[in-house]
Image (cartoon, rainbow over all chains, first blue to last red; front, side, top):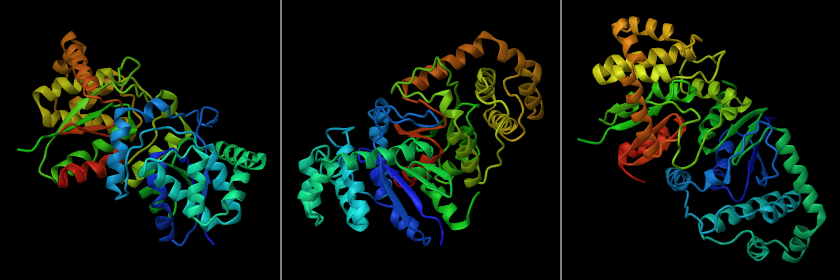
Length: 200
Length: 200
């Protein structure tokens, strides 16, 4: 059985969203599976390579335009949100809690969170929006709400972030397979070649 | 007549080299021409978007590996130079002096400078190496040497850099066509779609 592809993302990352819409199909074409990891790239994130993509860069005219064009290039619906750089800790906590129990449901919910933010301009930093989307995905919202606010889900996310730091992740989206790191949607063709024919 | 594609690069940039090996063929497939601009992305460069790719990032383990893999992905010969981040002002001055007089020769020389650095591990910060390559490209080396050291070529490069700053260039390689900015070899497929079927 071939190694799965680890997919790291921040729910606030437009490129993370564009990747999320495509990664399972790409990896599936080569008979592999993905493991999704929701991460929060805030100021506390300790990138091993000391690479930090600053919030100023993400707000730059260049990136604003590039995100729109890159989504169009990949055929992914996209609208720049009115509030950028939302803090996504609650969403990330919710993701891992759900993923540990119902991976398929977690993935569907994660995509709905991304679309709520990058298509429908919803504020995914609020618990109300996250719960509404959870309800729509068939999740028990009382249980989900309690879990997101519980210290256990905070610890779970913290461990996930420490693991990402240790593995050399520094931005969203980020892919790792067989120890090889690929950063950005634009390295997805390189990831695909790797899956197709091995190291190069 | 369709607008040409402006191609900005720093001779110290591995991704600039990878792009240089491909850009004329890509653009030519769509009946357009390129204008090459050698730029020096040193600490004085004033990026309009306040985006600065730090030298630490370029020296990171990630980028070191990514450059090798990206070259292999594009089928471009590549060896990580022993000295990275060489200062490329002399090469850039020489390029523009030659380009203003003999554009074809300038391009052939520029490619030979890139290959000297990223394939043969030569020190392209030295005038000796630049002149040797100029001689091999059929350039009058006495005249070329005098021009590189002349204040005029310094002013010429300075104007080129100020133009790049004003147009929103911030890294190498960088492409502009019809006011649209594309950063990085990985945006070349987007550039190609733009040339093929217009804005998206």
